[in-house]
Length: 92
Image 1: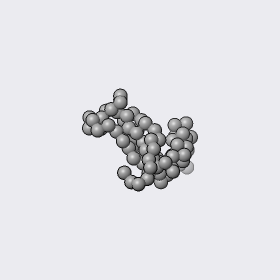
Image 2 (image 1 turned 180 degrees about the horizontal axis):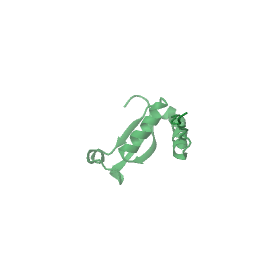
Image 3 (image 1 turned 90 degrees about the vertical axis):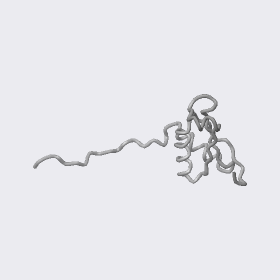
Image 4 (image 1 turned 180 degrees about the vertical axis):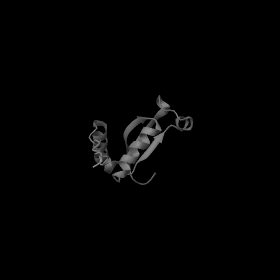
């Protein structure tokens, strides 16, 4: 690791969810490290103690990262589809 101090932001089941959250945080320029028990990672476990992945962020980014995850879990980051059918199949 670097000289920065890192703290566990969240623990999630499985690498898929952890990678999704890492992408969300890194898109907001928050560095992220994922830690999982070696055996769990090698086998690909997503349940139980070996399936837990810890998401770490620098301590100085903790508040901002926690706010982003709170918004994510509350569904405030979801954008409703605003698709409008712009095809014009009507014959004149």
